[in-house]
Image (cartoon, rainbow over all chains, first blue to last red; front, top):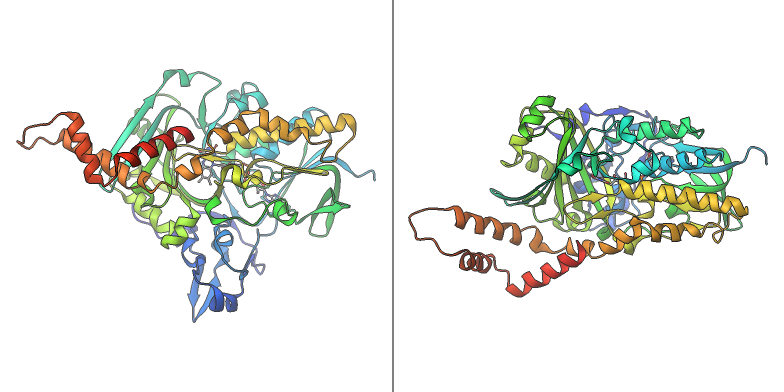
Length: 94
Length: 430
Ligand SMILES: Cc1cc2nc3c(=O)[nH]c(=O)nc-3n(C[C@H](O)[C@H](O)[C@H](O)COP(=O)(O)OP(=O)(O)OC[C@H]3O[C@@H](n4cnc5c(N)ncnc54)[C@H](O)[C@@H]3O)c2cc1C
């Protein structure tokens, strides 16, 4: 099989995008002051999190809704909940 | 209030739909609320359901359920970067219904089970996320979704591994990293004949691989590969604490796993159809929350009930079983019209008496055994080293097996004492 990048993989998945209603919020001032691991940057299987201009941002549209970031976050910086009913990733196979 | 239901179930996964089906069959008014657009749309498993329990719930299930294959071949693979040592177990008896194990895809399977519950009279409400359990005087009396309120005698939480609701209610603490694992999975499409030729399968029989060692690059956990009719389920399960310690990326580990020279030929020519991730509760009994409160029960992954001993991941059968037990407990409470924690208390007894708690206890040592580093590097290396010595014919005179084995052991840096200790720990926990 050919190598595929994470964005390529996500583009094959099915999503019902909830435009204008992000289900993830990052209080990056907490990350920048007390977080030692910034685990969200590497544990997320969908690479939702990245550091841009010194801030952690969440590209929430590709979220697979596993909750690993929330479980891994050592602070209260991450407000992660499930998308509103009916929205988000739709596993056709699972 | 007259618009009050007997039971509200949160989550139409296997635990929730099993409970709904049982309760509806008994004539209770049941509402099954699911946040996804249809049952299964949010759910993900490796996909081997060990389950005669399914036959208890839906007799002769195989005549109607969307099952992929029945597993007749179980393989354990100890893997290093370049080599692997396989245990290959086949049993033709596993071909007989009610099958020992079947492969399933949750997007289809859960949808079917949800429909079974509906047919039996449960009211399925998809596309609604429950935000809160309403508690009055210490008793759960219903749910809130947005600003809609719905009331019932009993609420069953079957909302899966993240169970926000159990956490909100204080029935369980925030996760410890060491109690959780993250699973990453890809579904790979291949023609049916290719799968059958490649894996030596006939008809609808199937194979399940559990892969320990290099697959997870030293991180506790394992890989899996399961055959479906026209797809292959493949993925990794990795312990969260060790991922955080090592700073490894699950997505990259997955790519390397798929590209590994032992794995790549198995999926060669395939088409990636879906990429998913989901967490597995792996803390064993140490993470079991309080299962009952006044007016409420917790079932399935939400109750932290799953077993991973490195070779098999099990949670679907436990979800079905606890869903059934929850329904039975509600029926017992209904007879007495007592929905307090005491009235529902038989739930704990039913679980304790079922295979769920018996197996949870049998495998109680598995979480700590899984943390034996030697399992991921030293032992696979040692086995491969041993086999390499046995099969290498390079003009040097051969030695007997026992001295070769001792030498491989010595080279691996593991002491006999550790082998004995791990063996004992493994034997006790597996
Ligand atoms: C990678 C991986 C491989 C696995 N492999 C296997 C395997 O081979 N065999 C096996 O037996 N087990 C396996 N498991 C474990 C198995 O998937 C789980 O144990 C099982 O899915 C648990 O079922 P459940 O019904 O308790 O929870 P889930 O299947 O998670 O169902 C929970 C349901 O609740 C819904 N929900 C959640 N919150 C809300 C809310 N607030 N409002 C409304 N609805 C909500 C969800 O959408 C979902 O439908 C695996 C798990 C993973 C991650």
